[in-house]
Length: 618
Image 1 (cartoon, rainbow, N blue to C red):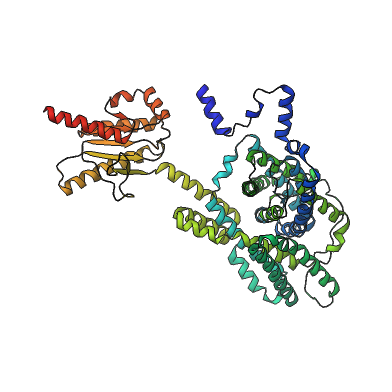
Image 2 (image 1 turned 45 degrees about the vertical axis):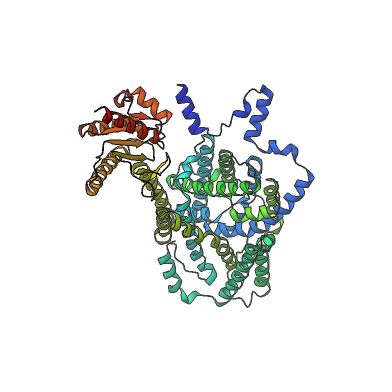
C-alpha cells in the first residue's frame, strides 16, 4: 500500500504541491491555502507604486492591441463584434486574481475563435438564427471552462500533452492559412461567400464572386495590410520598437474609421461595422443551454476549444516565465483559465486564453505583475462605456487586415524545417495535421493531430529500440556497433540492449527482435568462418525502467528457448523495480549466479574467465 501510495503521488503530484504545508500551524496552513488558490494574496502584499507604474504602461499598451483584436476575433468566431470587447473585460480581471503568470495577457485568440466558429456553424447558422448561435457559444465556453478547471483541480494536465509540439506546429499553420483565406471576404468586399472553411471551396467562392469585388475596399485593405505587416517587421527586427507593432492595429482602426467617416460618399462598397451597443457586459447565465437538443455539439466544441486554448495559454505563460526566471504552476493556470471562462460564459464572453502576441507586447512593455491585465480591462471598460459610437464607421476590411497580420506569425516554417531535420516522424505528424486542417476541416485536422500523436506514442511503446552492442577497445564500455564504427563484437557473446520498459504491448516484438539478432549473429559467424561460436546472449537492461508479468514471461521463454539451443541468457544491470518483480515472481533463481550481473562489462569478464578456467581444467 505504501508503494501504491508513492506511485500515485508521483503520477498526480510530481511537484509535491503540499510540501509547504508540512510542520505548519493551522493559521499558517489556512494562509498558505488561500495563497495557493488565489495567488494575488501571495504577491499582493509586496505590491508597490513602482510596480504599478510599469503595469499601467504595459496594460495601456496591450489594450491598444486588445481592442481591435477583440472585435476582429469575435467576427472570426461568427459572433457580434461587441462580444469580443466583452471578452477582453471580465476574463482579464479574473485571471489577475487567480493566475500565476506575470506576463500572460488574456483575451480572445484566433485559433479558439476559428475552431468555435467552424464547429458551431456545422450545427446552427450564425446568420439565420443568431440568438441560438450565441447561446451555443456561451454554453460551449462554460463547458470549456469546466473542462479546464477540472483538469487543473484533478491534476490531469498530462491530457493536453497528447497534442505534441509537432502536431501543434502543423495545426496552427493550417489554421492560420484557413483564417487568412476567410478574410478574403472582407479584404475584397465580397457579400456572397461560402460558409465552408476548406481551401478549395474558399478559393472557388472568391473567383465565382468576382462581380462583387470592391475596388475601394481592395485598395484600403492592401494599404493597411502593408502598413501592419511593415510595423510587424520593424518590431521583429528591433524588439525595442515593440510599441510600433503594438500601436499599429488601433492606429489603423482610427485612421480607417476617420477615412470612412470623412469620405463615405466616395467609398462605395466599403462595409462598416455599424452600431455597437454601449455599456457593461450583460449577464448571460439565462442563455446557457443545459437541456437543449444542441447540448452535445456545445460540449464537444467546449472540450476542443478548451484543450486548444489551454495548450496555448500554458505554453505562452511558460515561455515568458522562463525568460523572466520565475515559476509558473501549470495546474493553477488550468484552474485560472477555466474559472475565467466559466465566469465569462455568464457575462456574455466566449472562450479566452493567453495570447502570444499580446503577451509578447506585455513582456516587452515591462509588465511586472498580472495587474497589467486589470489595467487593460479598465481601458476596455472606458471604451465600452463611452467610446463605442466611435467604432460605427470602422470598415470591416481593416479588421480582416488585422486578423491576417496577427495569424501570419503562426506559420512557423523554421520549426517545420527543424522537425524535418531532426525527426522525420514528427515532420510527418506536422504535415498530416496541416493538410487535415487546410483541405478537410478544422475539427478533422485536430482529430488527425491527436491521432498521429497517439500513433507515435503507440509506435514507441510497441516497437522499442533493441540494439546490438560491441566493446570499445581498451575500455569496459559497450556501445551500438551500428553507431560506433570502432565498437568490436566480443567472441562467443551477443550483447543486446533493450531501450524501453518491457510491457505486454512490446513483449512479443522484443522476443522476435532478440531471436532475429541471434540468427543474424550466427549467420555472421558462419560467413566469417569464426572458430568461436555463439554461446552467451547478454541482455543489457540498463534502460529498462519497468517490467510487467508479460515482460517477465518473455525473459523466461527466451531463456528456455536458448537453453534448448545450448545458449545461455544473461541479464545485465536490471534496475531496482525490475529486480524486485523478478524476485517476487521467483524468476531470478532460473538464471542462477552466472546469469545476473551488475554491468555488461562484468558479465563478459566473469563469464570469459569461467570459460577460460573451464578449458584449462579440461
